[in-house]
Amino acid sequence: MKSMNIKVRAFVAGAVGMIVAFGIVELVHGIVDTVPSVLVAVAQRVIEFTPGGFATTAIEVLGAADIPVLITMTIILTLALAGFLAYLSLKSRIAALVGLVVLAAVALASSFSEPLFAPIPTVITILGALYAGSFVARFLLNSSGLRTVEPATKPASPPASDGGPRLAGVRSKEAHSTGGIAVGRRNFLLLSGGAAVAGLAATGAGRWLGSEGAGEISSAAPLPVGSQVGSTASITETLPPPLPEASLDVTGMPPLITPADDFYLIDTALSSPRINVDNWTLKVMGEVDNPIELSYNDLISLPTREADVTLSCISNEVGGGLVSNGRWTGVLLSDVLKEAGVSPEKITSASEQLVGRSADGWTAGFPTETALDGREALVAFGLNESELPLKHGYPVRLVVPGLYGYVSATKWLTELELTNWDFDAYWIQRSWAKEGPIMTQSRIDTVAEEDSLTAGTIQIGGVAWAPHRGIDRVEVSTDDGETWNDAQLAAQLALDTWRQYVYDWEAQPGEHTIKVRATDGDGETQTEDEAAPHPAGATGYHTIQVTVA
Image (cartoon, rainbow, N blue to C red; front, top):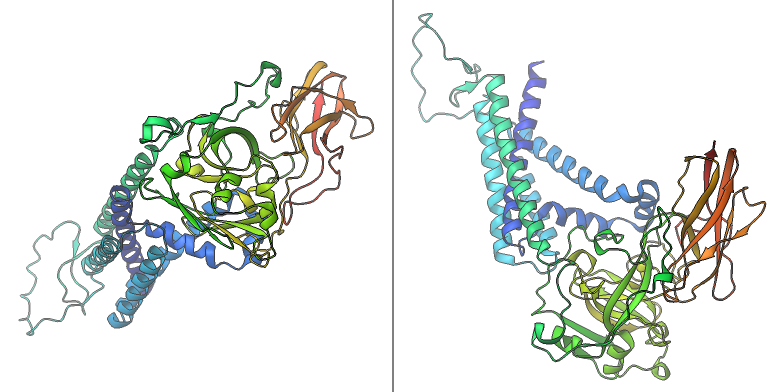
């Protein structure tokens, strides 16, 4: 029992010390954004070094919970390791010191792999935080009577107890301990709890400060054109407001244009790179006649335009919410490539893939000819008539109609490289399909699974999408696919966007299975064959069960 008590106290001391260290780093990170969050940096390296097959399985099993689970496991394992090192220090301080050095090395290596970090402040912060955490752990070990400090000379024998009163919360030292007064269990818990609360408070303050800084780059900021950035640029091709007939006034129908705050968000980056637009450049390199490097002002001085484009994530399940429609502002990707001497007739096997590279090193690649086939592929700096939000790729990202994001939608864009088809980008290395055309899909939004409905007219509606092909027809079945009924379609906003539909169903009492299917502008009806998102995108009909009373 005594041995177990020693282990528990040592573990608590080490874990609390690590919480304090985390808190210091997070607080500095919130104040100085060029000092990375060590927790995020380590978790990011775990993502990068996880074998592709395992990463894909984790995504399939955990879905949107994969990142929270990773962060939680990283915290638990780090605290457990810190607790183990604290216990190890009771047996061998040298071994514990070696373990601490390894922790420091991992933290520094992970942080140095983050984009836009400042080396000297990062080193000082990490080493200082680990020292502070070690100090707290050592203090708790000493106060608990678990650490012994050998005196220079043997102390005189203490006088015999006179049976007088003893201080509350203080117990006499263990027979082998000479490291000062040791507190009782209650006071040890108070000391540990206080230190842990301080560390957590520092962590919370750091995260809050960081979010406040990120909030400065928000979806409410004006577009960076004209005199606002000291340039003569202007949006040379604007779009009128969407026509009223492009939207259907049906309860539960998603808005035609998705608000920036509601736009779906999937990233491998655990923390959005904060890029100083004054220092940002876009390189066009690789197999090009004229490699170029554009500043932000250079980019927006090119002819700009607005385009309505629906984006979808490869990991979206049939009927899922990882699809959104936005009005994007930017420069045609073909115009940027033209500046580098790229044209359709010059594409060779050495330049048939266009790779976008993010500030954090993430890559996505697609056929170069896709950028030059007339579609409104954009190097975008605006969303919904406002500046591009940080979490969606500020200052610049790629938007390519008709392709899933994993092969095209590079956020925080810094490089465009023309290379051969042998290069495998980030998700291709992790066993996803090389090409990623968005499947024709449809979704039921106005009625939900297991709804209890009242007999009478029920409006079954939602959205259907087939970017760069458009939607020509949507059909709804209320009898599990036995019969199909044409739905009313809103006007098509653009071939690259989703289209709203509604079917007025005269519902009768009973159990009903509702399905929806869409036909694209090429005359192809979406397949009913069911497939999971991996490796090339989910297929099948969105199907729900309802009860009508």
